[in-house]
Length: 103
Image 1: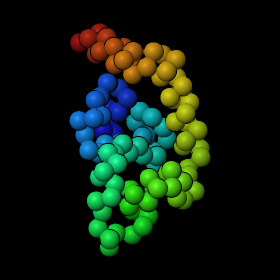
Image 2: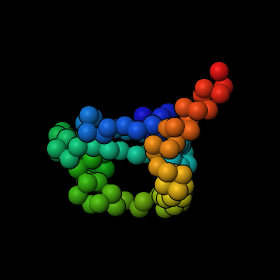
Image 3: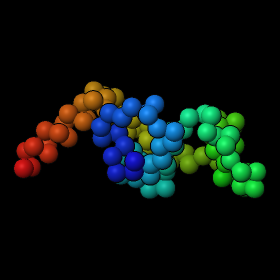
Image 4: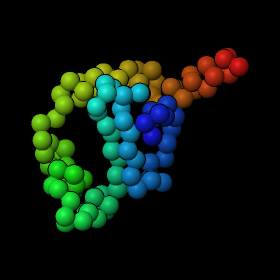
């Protein structure tokens, strides 16, 4: 969902895993967003390195390694802006209006 995350309302309950590169709509390059059903996190081969297991990050509240603090700060600013604009619903409505104007 790298290209459209936070540009429209999405029912995340319909997905087992959502992965998005944040550089387009959320924050700086290198930051990713993962939304995952908890039951899927444990379905990982034992041979997979610890760092690559979602269960590792889940157990450690996403703090298994040093978090990218600048990227997190930038995401917080974007989230504050989206909320101030009226949330994802308002962002989606504005984008629909802009796309109609462009036609």
